[in-house]
Amino acid sequence: MRAHEAGALHADLGSRGPAWLRTPADVNALVPQLWPRTVHRGRDGALSVGGLRVVDLAREFGTPVYLLDEHDFRSRCREFRDAFRGADVCYAGKAFLAKAIVRIVAAEGLGLDVCTGGELAAALAAGMPPERIGLHGNNKSAAELARALDVGVGRIIVDSFDEITRLTALARSQGVRPRVLVRVTVGVEAHTHEYIATAHEDQKFGFSLAGGAAAAAVARILAEDVLELRGLHSHIGSQIFDTAAFELSARRVLGLAAAIREAHGVPPQELDLGGGFGIAYTTQDDPTSPADLAASLAKIVEQESAALRLPVPRLTIEPGRAIVGPAMFTLYEVGTVKDVDGIRTYVSVDGGMSDNIRTALYDANYSATVASRASDAPAALARVVGRHCEAGDIVVKDEFLPGDVRPGDLLAVPGTGAYCRSMASNYNHVPRPPVVAVRDGQARVIVRRETEEDLLALDVG
Ligand code: LLP
Image (cartoon, rainbow, N blue to C red; front, side, top):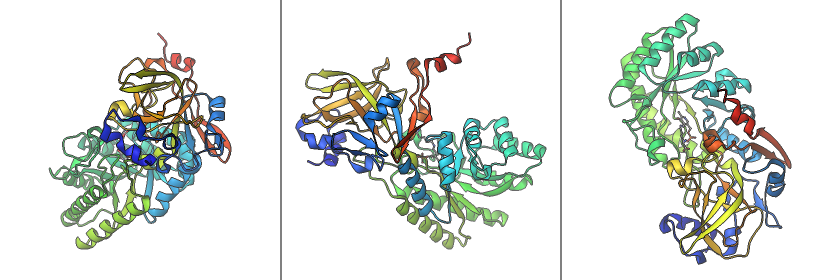
């Protein structure tokens, strides 16, 4: 059995599965779509990334550590940029933001999508040109909006009537005319976890298309001379594989654009279709390439615009996960191994839900491999768990690991670039791991490890 077939068994088998399904060779093999592009297993059995052995990286930087394959990250930026020529690609900073990341994204020609004053501050501190920044959020504070106006962010994606009132007053008092997009809730039920689906009606984001709020928001903005309506925005959710869902959302937003032209005589010039493009966490996931995404979105926008006799709007997309997710993996050290007879092996690592909350929060699936050596031992079904004081502290629900996995082994979990460090916590007073970028045999810390002093620094009582 090949490794990817064995991986596909995760769901079928639920939490159990006969260990003979995976041979030692399968367990040592790396499925390319799950790993950053420079990762491979060397002759000594250990993984390397960017030309450096993870064993050496663990010795130098400690564990747990997030390792960023900078070549991989840059190449994914470029793939989106090249595939979406003539469109704007804004990296969604919420997936993972650090000053070094902003600099790379800017250098690779992308814009940046931020959704809080903190993300905006990081973007500006790293030198992202303000006109390439889009500011999102369903509850932007007056201070956040004022700062955005002050620095001249490129787009403000307006999310509520209260925000229109707030933004109008601020723009007037600051003497500026911001460019805005209206966030439209298009009613597309994308096939993803409920908490990360954002275009169905019953949720907090955006103006409803079906209920008429989106058209009303457009009318209000057009009536305010201090706001410049540039276009419409839709984001239907995250970790979506179904290109048809993006196509449907594009079609619906363009329908609104045609209605706006009818009502006000001016068609919106821009169409932002948000992010949400899915990546492979296990061998069961089959992501669409940026080139295929670009082709299908461009086609639908062109066809639909022609059918509605609209000028083709300028397209923007906001991928976060699809750029940074596969570019990083987490390296842990195994601390304890416990066999629960006939059920599974619990492999405890030195991190857990504080560095990857996604398994606990979204029931997300990950995979794992022993990274410090290859093994000839028969495979066994394992659960990778963390060190937190909580039974739900699971990093990888089910994975076949070598039956001889033991304390001191390094374990690597791929696909942790998006929404892991950015959603990390200090639960149980565990310091958050560093992010180390590796490229061409060089490693540099881009986010340092937290210390106990950091943890106590805010504690002033
Ligand atoms: N644009 C907007 C307006 C968004 O709200 C988001 C994500 C993105 C772009 C980027 O989506 P991406 O391409 O990364 O899927 N914490 C969850 C994901 C929350 C996504 C929130 N918005 C997770 O870990 O799966």
